Image 1 (cartoon, helix red, strand yellow):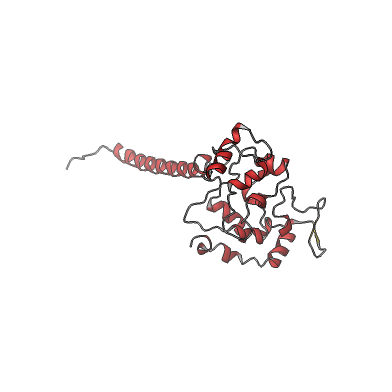
Image 2 (cartoon, helix red, strand yellow; image 1 turned 30 degrees about the vertical axis):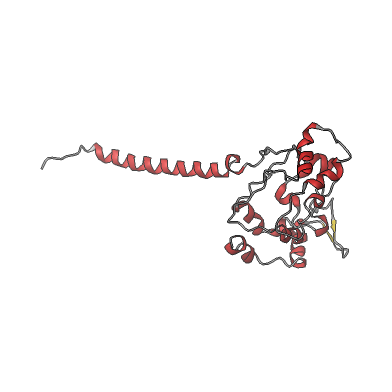
Length: 233
């Protein structure tokens, strides 16, 4: 019986299979990279807001504590978006005719809430509790970045699962004393910058401090806090 395919068909078939595998692999890699990129996460991208609120001006310039606006951050899963009345506590006295604050004044006059764009927004299938993290010694900076240096708010981190697990697998690298959670100027301990706890103990190494705080704040085991059910309920 005569040969149907030329001998070169074997090489073509092998190259075709290799080519398909390479193309699929490249497409999967590109998809994963895009999913991690600011195009998908909006990391480092300032979001449009009804009013150009500056954390740099209010937190660093005016020294306003995070909790003045985010009132429920220590006791609730949600940090809280301040009502317009909170803004007007100051702006009924200063910048009363500033054109860019007209939406705030209009909101106060009509009782219609401003619609802010969520910057650090997690998917609905993720459970996150601000109060747990705050009371376990996780500083605002760890998730939100150097907020007091942001003229316009943006997501400093991707908040993707691999990023969260980076902390949950080694919380001792990030914990700080509870009284420093809202301090944007806090520096991790070093020989030049020792950290003193309320009982007088002094630490010059972050891992040593973190391990001590894990014990004091009753941080659960790594197995527990990396369990799927911890964040996906």
